[in-house]
Length: 164
Length: 262
Image (cartoon, rainbow over all chains, first blue to last red; front, side, top):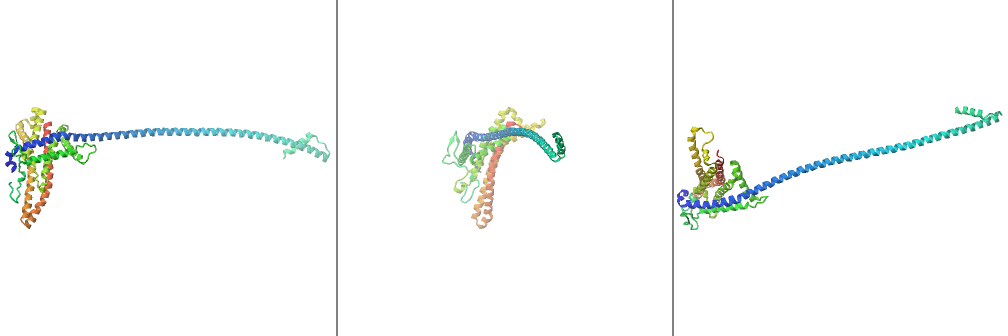
């Protein structure tokens, strides 16, 4: 077993070179490089955590903005609805008013026309009566030679005419 | 060279030889020859450094290499977090170095470089190496323990709720089990690595000798041995990872004892 057979000649060289090489590894690699490698890892972890937090915050903000937008949108819609309803009501009231005015005008016109017609009718009737009375006076005079007064003729005509 | 012509010596792979005539290098009277073992330590260091440097691009969106390095640092970080808690963070450099150094050493020692004439050397199969690593880990436990808790650190050897009369018995048992820790750390890794490599070498000698001994031996011995070798090699890759993990895990558990006592 060379490990034991050679120990007296080689132990010092083994220990010396081990201390040299392992010392190099410890001080240069272990203390010099490893902390920086781990720092990079920590940095990356921080960055990822930060990015995640930022994304989370952005999402929350987006949600908030959407909520606000929705609220505003609802308000706008309600407002628009109100405007439309008001316009509708206004238009309805206006047209009603107009209709009422037109109706009134028509009514007055109708009433006037009726009055006129009635007047014309009475006028015509009186004329017909007087003509009929005169005609009756003439007819009676010529047929019976009896002279009828205008008043009598008139009343007779009136009597006859009510039967018409 | 212990190996004779046409024969495989399963122990020869652990033989340490000085390279480039560095046999006589000395430091304060101690021999510090640059051996094949030292060369593989340097290779491990270079490969590990290159590996981690490749993960230092520090991109926010990591590439494959960076992802791989970050997986390892994250793995060690999680292990320390789970075993020690928040205080475990400061041990990441040490545990990471320990784990990766052993892992790379184990894996590099398994490379089939023999095909192109190089001899991979697994320095974690030498208890001089694993022993030093275990002593470093154990020293950290002692230093942290006494630094944080002072003399109270000895209460580690008296579990909670121990009846007073039992303390004189429990204390030495706990103390011994505590003192055995560096040995168990060092021996576990050394034995696991050595056993695997010896087994592979023995099986490979079966393959070679069986093939040389004729068709019947080749069919009966060499082929099954070769198939077994493939399986054992896969197992050894697993063991390389597991042993590195166990070493790092036990070290972190021991550090946890030092940080929090019981």
